[in-house]
Amino acid sequence: MTTRIAAIIALSLAAPLSLAQQGPDHSGHVHRPAQDNGGHAAHPPAQPPATGIPPGQATRPPVPTIRPEDRVAAFPDLPPHAMHQGGSNFLFLADELEWQDADEGSALAWDLSGWVGGDIDRLAFRSEGERTNGHTEEAELQLLWSHAIGPWWETVAGVRQDFKPGSPQTWAAFGVQGMPLFGLETEATAFLGEGGQSALRLEAEYDILLTQRWVLQPTAELNLHGRNDEARGVGAGFSDANLGLRLRYEISRQFAPYIGLTWNRAYGNTADLLRAEGEDVSDTRLVAGIRFWF
Image (cartoon, rainbow, N blue to C red; front, top):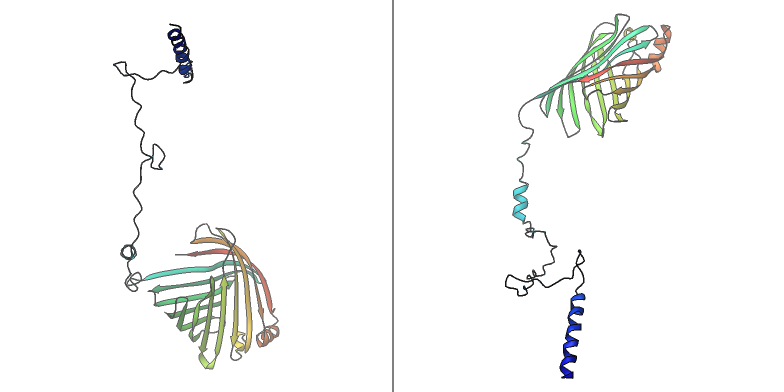
């Protein structure tokens, strides 16, 4: 009897302890095993198999391996020159159209060029000149046929007509133009004129991008002549140099006002001819103008 009483007391003490070990829930109540409708303890839910994928994320199919035939299909070979065949284009560029503050008064100067044609052969023109106080001091027009000899170079050949100074004069013209360095535009043109006159002109200009809209453009032009031509104030040898520096603001790529300075100086026999006429051999001018193309 004493043994049975001791066992009953031990069981009554053990039951509350096992319930307490399960810990309280958030409401302070003791957790009890879940029961189904029949009063029996419910089985715990089955655990998903361990896959290494965080819960709530869908599995992704593996990325297929790219095969050589996939690359060929994505990047097919283009037919030769397919992007450049047929059609023609044109360009008109007013590189300089400006007012200049000259010693003799206000001057209007221009430097225009353009072309029409395809990628290899084009018909081009160049024109430059100056009017001071309503009188044309210098004016010339070149009509040229250009032929591309590489991605950055083309040859030119044609005629040049001088209207001023002096009486009109016609020249045969031939040369090359292109970009030996990125952005450096160069022209080298030789001329053969009436009466055995000859000349060589070298030109270069470069655009320095200060910002997306502000561009600084230095320019240079050198002229050489084969013989004296007093009627036009030109002497044999290295005759003159023209340097310019212009700062433009591109309202758009096709239209930009600018301001700048130009410096001109005569050398050798040309300088002697100017001194004999009582004229200055050098000249510095303030310029303002617009540059546009279409």
